[in-house]
Amino acid sequence: MELPIKQKYIISKNVLFGFRKDVPIRVIINNFSSIEKSSRDKFTDQEINENFGFLPINDNKYSERNCERWYLIDKSKPKELYSYDLWCTRYRWAGRGKSEPYYDWVSINRMRYHRDYFDPYEVNFFFDKEKDCVVSDSIPFNDANFNKIKNTINLVLKMFGECIVSDGDNEYLGKIEIVKWRFLPSGHWTDDKEKIIQRTGRGKKQEIENFMHDLEILYSFKPQKVAIGENGFRGYVAMCFENQKVCILESKFPLNATYVFDIDFWEDLSKKTKTNIIEAKLAKHRFYHNKNWKDEITKVLEK
Image (cartoon, rainbow, N blue to C red; front, side, top):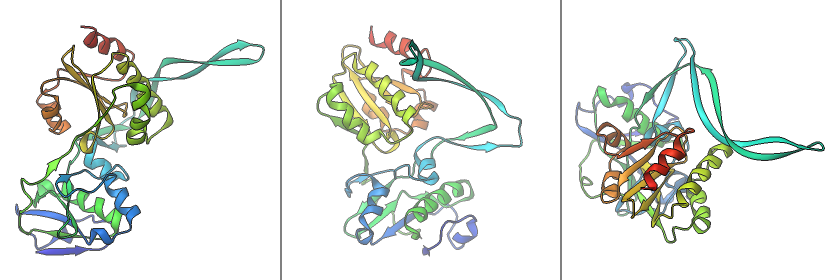
Protein backbone atom coordinates (compact mmCIF):
# COMPACT_ATOMS: atom_id res chain seq x y z
CA MET A 1 0.00 0.00 0.00
CA GLU A 2 1.21 3.51 -0.83
CA LEU A 3 -0.47 6.57 0.65
CA PRO A 4 0.33 10.05 -0.75
CA ILE A 5 0.08 12.82 1.88
CA LYS A 6 0.05 16.47 0.86
CA GLN A 7 -0.64 18.83 3.78
CA LYS A 8 1.18 20.87 6.43
CA TYR A 9 1.24 18.13 9.08
CA ILE A 10 -0.73 15.20 10.48
CA ILE A 11 -2.17 14.87 13.96
CA SER A 12 -4.34 11.76 14.03
CA LYS A 13 -3.48 8.18 13.07
CA ASN A 14 -6.79 8.12 11.16
CA VAL A 15 -4.80 9.58 8.25
CA LEU A 16 -2.96 6.25 8.06
CA PHE A 17 -6.10 4.09 7.98
CA GLY A 18 -5.52 0.88 6.01
CA PHE A 19 -1.98 0.06 7.08
CA ARG A 20 -1.66 -3.32 8.78
CA LYS A 21 -0.63 -3.59 12.41
CA ASP A 22 3.09 -4.32 12.99
CA VAL A 23 3.90 -4.23 9.26
CA PRO A 24 6.93 -1.93 8.69
CA ILE A 25 6.25 1.32 6.85
CA ARG A 26 8.56 3.94 5.32
CA VAL A 27 8.26 7.63 4.50
CA ILE A 28 9.36 8.41 0.93
CA ILE A 29 10.22 11.60 -0.96
CA ASN A 30 9.95 10.91 -4.69
CA ASN A 31 11.70 12.78 -7.56
CA PHE A 32 14.26 14.12 -5.11
CA SER A 33 16.67 15.50 -7.74
CA SER A 34 13.90 17.70 -9.16
CA ILE A 35 13.33 19.45 -5.82
CA GLU A 36 14.89 22.89 -5.55
CA LYS A 37 18.54 22.51 -4.51
CA SER A 38 18.25 24.94 -1.60
CA SER A 39 15.49 22.76 -0.11
CA ARG A 40 17.45 19.54 -0.66
CA ASP A 41 20.58 21.02 0.94
CA LYS A 42 18.54 22.27 3.88
CA PHE A 43 17.24 18.75 4.41
CA THR A 44 20.55 16.86 4.16
CA ASP A 45 23.30 19.42 4.90
CA GLN A 46 25.75 17.13 3.13
CA GLU A 47 26.55 15.55 -0.22
CA ILE A 48 24.00 12.87 -1.08
CA ASN A 49 25.51 9.38 -1.26
CA GLU A 50 23.29 6.37 -1.91
CA ASN A 51 25.37 4.14 0.38
CA PHE A 52 25.12 6.32 3.48
CA GLY A 53 22.23 7.14 5.74
CA PHE A 54 21.73 10.50 7.44
CA LEU A 55 19.59 12.27 10.01
CA PRO A 56 18.01 15.49 8.65
CA ILE A 57 19.47 18.65 10.14
CA ASN A 58 17.97 20.49 13.14
CA ASP A 59 15.89 22.95 11.13
CA ASN A 60 12.55 22.50 12.86
CA LYS A 61 11.11 20.85 15.96
CA TYR A 62 10.48 17.58 14.13
CA SER A 63 14.08 17.13 12.94
CA GLU A 64 15.27 18.28 16.37
CA ARG A 65 13.19 15.57 18.05
CA ASN A 66 14.60 13.08 15.58
CA CYS A 67 18.23 13.59 16.58
CA GLU A 68 18.35 15.33 19.97
CA ARG A 69 16.85 14.68 23.38
CA TRP A 70 13.73 16.85 23.63
CA TYR A 71 11.12 17.89 26.16
CA LEU A 72 7.54 18.99 26.71
CA ILE A 73 6.61 21.69 29.21
CA ASP A 74 4.01 20.71 31.81
CA LYS A 75 2.30 23.87 33.11
CA SER A 76 -0.06 21.85 35.30
CA LYS A 77 2.78 21.43 37.81
CA PRO A 78 4.35 24.22 39.88
CA LYS A 79 7.47 25.96 38.65
CA GLU A 80 10.83 24.44 39.61
CA LEU A 81 14.24 25.92 40.33
CA TYR A 82 16.56 25.47 37.36
CA SER A 83 20.31 26.03 37.80
CA TYR A 84 23.22 25.89 35.38
CA ASP A 85 26.77 27.24 35.03
CA LEU A 86 27.79 29.44 32.11
CA TRP A 87 31.24 30.50 30.92
CA CYS A 88 30.76 34.05 29.67
CA THR A 89 32.20 37.51 29.14
CA ARG A 90 31.87 39.91 32.08
CA TYR A 91 33.03 43.50 32.56
CA ARG A 92 34.78 45.24 35.45
CA TRP A 93 35.61 48.83 36.26
CA ALA A 94 38.96 49.92 34.77
CA GLY A 95 38.97 53.55 35.91
CA ARG A 96 38.36 56.84 34.10
CA GLY A 97 34.88 55.82 32.98
CA LYS A 98 36.11 52.67 31.24
CA SER A 99 35.48 48.97 31.71
CA GLU A 100 37.43 45.92 30.58
CA PRO A 101 36.19 42.45 29.68
CA TYR A 102 37.14 39.29 31.54
CA TYR A 103 35.91 35.68 31.43
CA ASP A 104 34.48 33.67 34.28
CA TRP A 105 31.90 31.06 35.22
CA VAL A 106 28.52 32.45 36.24
CA SER A 107 25.83 30.46 38.07
CA ILE A 108 22.34 31.08 36.68
CA ASN A 109 19.28 30.30 38.81
CA ARG A 110 15.81 30.55 37.31
CA MET A 111 12.30 29.29 37.93
CA ARG A 112 10.60 27.40 35.09
CA TYR A 113 7.74 24.99 34.51
CA HIS A 114 8.38 21.26 34.84
CA ARG A 115 9.82 19.55 31.74
CA ASP A 116 9.36 15.93 30.72
CA TYR A 117 12.31 14.71 28.63
CA PHE A 118 12.22 12.18 25.79
CA ASP A 119 14.89 10.31 23.85
CA PRO A 120 15.35 11.17 20.14
CA TYR A 121 13.50 9.05 17.58
CA GLU A 122 16.67 8.64 15.45
CA VAL A 123 15.00 7.71 12.17
CA ASN A 124 17.60 7.71 9.39
CA PHE A 125 17.00 8.57 5.74
CA PHE A 126 18.93 7.49 2.67
CA PHE A 127 19.05 8.26 -1.05
CA ASP A 128 18.18 5.72 -3.75
CA LYS A 129 19.86 7.11 -6.87
CA GLU A 130 18.25 4.63 -9.25
CA LYS A 131 14.72 5.43 -8.07
CA ASP A 132 15.55 9.10 -7.39
CA CYS A 133 13.93 9.05 -3.98
CA VAL A 134 14.84 9.55 -0.33
CA VAL A 135 13.53 6.81 1.96
CA SER A 136 13.29 6.61 5.74
CA ASP A 137 14.12 3.68 7.99
CA SER A 138 11.28 1.20 8.33
CA ILE A 139 9.06 1.60 11.41
CA PRO A 140 6.59 -1.11 12.48
CA PHE A 141 3.08 0.34 12.28
CA ASN A 142 1.46 0.12 15.71
CA ASP A 143 0.19 2.34 18.51
CA ALA A 144 3.50 2.26 20.40
CA ASN A 145 5.32 3.72 17.37
CA PHE A 146 2.69 6.24 16.30
CA ASN A 147 4.44 9.32 17.74
CA LYS A 148 7.66 8.26 16.01
CA ILE A 149 5.81 7.73 12.73
CA LYS A 150 3.93 11.02 13.07
CA ASN A 151 7.15 12.93 13.78
CA THR A 152 8.88 11.36 10.76
CA ILE A 153 6.00 12.23 8.43
CA ASN A 154 5.73 15.78 9.79
CA LEU A 155 9.49 16.25 9.46
CA VAL A 156 9.20 15.62 5.71
CA LEU A 157 5.94 17.57 5.30
CA LYS A 158 7.49 20.58 7.03
CA MET A 159 10.37 20.56 4.52
CA PHE A 160 8.63 19.57 1.29
CA GLY A 161 4.85 19.73 1.82
CA GLU A 162 4.24 16.17 0.63
CA CYS A 163 5.44 12.58 0.98
CA ILE A 164 4.40 8.96 0.41
CA VAL A 165 3.91 6.44 3.22
CA SER A 166 4.51 2.88 2.04
CA ASP A 167 4.48 -0.62 3.51
CA GLY A 168 6.30 -2.07 0.50
CA ASP A 169 9.42 -4.24 0.29
CA ASN A 170 12.41 -4.15 2.63
CA GLU A 171 15.12 -4.20 -0.02
CA TYR A 172 17.13 -1.50 1.76
CA LEU A 173 17.61 -3.40 5.01
CA GLY A 174 21.27 -4.03 5.84
CA LYS A 175 22.59 -2.06 2.86
CA ILE A 176 22.90 1.40 4.37
CA GLU A 177 25.90 2.57 6.37
CA ILE A 178 25.42 5.35 8.91
CA VAL A 179 28.34 7.81 8.86
CA LYS A 180 29.07 9.26 12.29
CA TRP A 181 32.39 11.13 11.93
CA ARG A 182 34.37 13.26 9.49
CA PHE A 183 38.07 13.39 10.40
CA LEU A 184 40.04 16.64 10.19
CA PRO A 185 43.55 16.53 8.73
CA SER A 186 45.61 18.49 11.24
CA GLY A 187 44.55 18.28 14.88
CA HIS A 188 45.86 21.84 15.46
CA TRP A 189 43.49 24.38 16.98
CA THR A 190 44.32 27.30 14.67
CA ASP A 191 43.81 25.13 11.58
CA ASP A 192 40.74 23.22 12.76
CA LYS A 193 38.76 25.97 14.52
CA GLU A 194 37.27 27.45 11.34
CA LYS A 195 36.25 24.03 10.00
CA ILE A 196 34.56 23.19 13.30
CA ILE A 197 32.67 26.48 13.33
CA GLN A 198 31.50 25.89 9.75
CA ARG A 199 30.14 22.44 10.58
CA THR A 200 28.84 22.97 14.11
CA GLY A 201 28.86 26.72 14.69
CA ARG A 202 25.22 27.55 14.07
CA GLY A 203 23.53 28.53 17.27
CA LYS A 204 23.37 31.18 19.96
CA LYS A 205 26.44 33.40 20.40
CA GLN A 206 26.93 32.41 24.04
CA GLU A 207 26.52 28.72 23.17
CA ILE A 208 29.26 28.95 20.54
CA GLU A 209 31.58 30.89 22.86
CA ASN A 210 31.21 28.18 25.52
CA PHE A 211 31.86 25.46 22.94
CA MET A 212 35.01 27.15 21.61
CA HIS A 213 36.26 27.71 25.17
CA ASP A 214 35.88 24.01 26.00
CA LEU A 215 37.49 22.89 22.73
CA GLU A 216 40.45 25.18 23.27
CA ILE A 217 41.07 23.54 26.65
CA LEU A 218 40.91 20.07 25.07
CA TYR A 219 43.22 21.09 22.21
CA SER A 220 45.78 22.30 24.75
CA PHE A 221 46.37 18.60 25.59
CA LYS A 222 47.35 17.98 21.92
CA PRO A 223 44.93 15.37 20.51
CA GLN A 224 46.37 13.09 17.81
CA LYS A 225 43.11 12.83 15.85
CA VAL A 226 40.10 15.12 15.60
CA ALA A 227 36.76 14.36 13.97
CA ILE A 228 33.50 16.29 13.52
CA GLY A 229 30.29 14.43 14.30
CA GLU A 230 27.59 13.72 11.73
CA ASN A 231 23.98 12.58 12.02
CA GLY A 232 23.17 11.59 15.61
CA PHE A 233 26.45 13.13 16.78
CA ARG A 234 26.00 16.41 14.87
CA GLY A 235 27.32 19.20 17.07
CA TYR A 236 29.96 16.94 18.65
CA VAL A 237 33.73 16.98 18.13
CA ALA A 238 35.75 13.81 18.90
CA MET A 239 39.37 14.09 20.04
CA CYS A 240 41.66 11.08 20.39
CA PHE A 241 44.45 11.15 22.98
CA GLU A 242 46.69 8.15 22.37
CA ASN A 243 48.91 8.53 25.45
CA GLN A 244 45.88 8.57 27.76
CA LYS A 245 44.13 5.89 25.64
CA VAL A 246 40.86 7.83 25.56
CA CYS A 247 38.67 9.61 23.04
CA ILE A 248 36.67 12.60 24.28
CA LEU A 249 33.43 13.68 22.62
CA GLU A 250 32.57 17.31 23.29
CA SER A 251 29.21 18.87 22.36
CA LYS A 252 28.28 22.41 21.44
CA PHE A 253 24.97 21.93 23.26
CA PRO A 254 25.53 22.93 26.92
CA LEU A 255 22.94 20.44 28.23
CA ASN A 256 24.68 17.54 26.45
CA ALA A 257 27.36 15.72 28.40
CA THR A 258 31.03 15.32 27.49
CA TYR A 259 31.68 11.60 26.79
CA VAL A 260 34.97 9.82 27.50
CA PHE A 261 35.51 6.50 25.65
CA ASP A 262 38.26 3.92 25.56
CA ILE A 263 40.28 4.86 22.46
CA ASP A 264 40.22 1.28 21.08
CA PHE A 265 36.43 1.13 21.01
CA TRP A 266 35.19 4.69 20.56
CA GLU A 267 34.28 4.45 16.85
CA ASP A 268 32.28 1.25 17.35
CA LEU A 269 30.58 2.67 20.44
CA SER A 270 29.77 5.95 18.73
CA LYS A 271 27.88 4.03 16.02
CA LYS A 272 25.33 3.24 18.69
CA THR A 273 22.65 5.76 19.57
CA LYS A 274 23.21 8.12 22.46
CA THR A 275 20.29 6.40 24.17
CA ASN A 276 22.08 3.02 23.92
CA ILE A 277 25.32 4.52 25.24
CA ILE A 278 23.64 6.03 28.28
CA GLU A 279 21.41 3.06 29.13
CA ALA A 280 24.23 0.51 28.79
CA LYS A 281 26.78 2.77 30.52
CA LEU A 282 29.25 2.30 27.66
CA ALA A 283 31.24 5.49 28.27
CA LYS A 284 34.14 5.55 30.74
CA HIS A 285 32.91 8.93 31.99
CA ARG A 286 30.15 11.47 31.31
CA PHE A 287 30.90 15.03 32.45
CA TYR A 288 28.36 17.84 32.52
CA HIS A 289 29.23 21.44 31.68
CA ASN A 290 29.66 23.28 34.95
CA LYS A 291 32.40 24.78 37.13
CA ASN A 292 33.90 21.32 37.73
CA TRP A 293 34.17 20.42 34.04
CA LYS A 294 37.76 21.61 33.48
CA ASP A 295 39.03 19.88 36.65
CA GLU A 296 37.33 16.59 35.70
CA ILE A 297 38.71 16.68 32.15
CA THR A 298 42.18 17.60 33.40
CA LYS A 299 42.22 14.58 35.74
CA VAL A 300 41.53 12.31 32.75
CA LEU A 301 44.09 13.90 30.42
CA GLU A 302 46.95 14.42 32.88
CA LYS A 303 47.22 10.70 33.68
